[in-house]
Length: 168
Image (cartoon, rainbow, N blue to C red):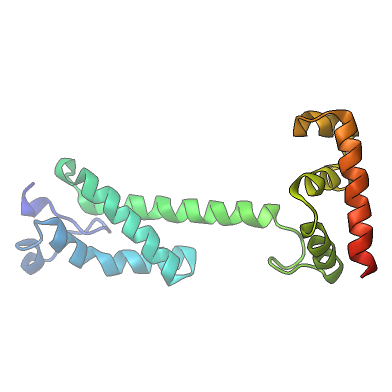
């Protein structure tokens, strides 16, 4: 790759004084790192996440370095695609979180979760599938790979254990 082909991530030729030295990936990194972090920060709002995205983009660029005619354009594309993926991930998280503030559990939910945590794993699974997922006992038996009578026993004993925990 000739140094005259080196363009910045914004498609502009690198300055003549930098172009002469910017033939190695290390020099390219020095020239392009901060502009790419600024670009990513403007897209994803947090510098920390922007730096991670830019680091990933530089890694991809390094892996393809020998075959690139315009590493700046390749890097910019990788940064923008990384930012788009981050924003898409955020949308999915927002879509699937409860309408309440994320990370905040209502007091009655916290109390129930605490009570359920005191049950054995099998009983907790059976209770959750029966009353939270509202599944019939036959379906629970199939999912847990146990007999129907075992599910009835797990639910019955799990409810008895919950009564003891709540009575305290």
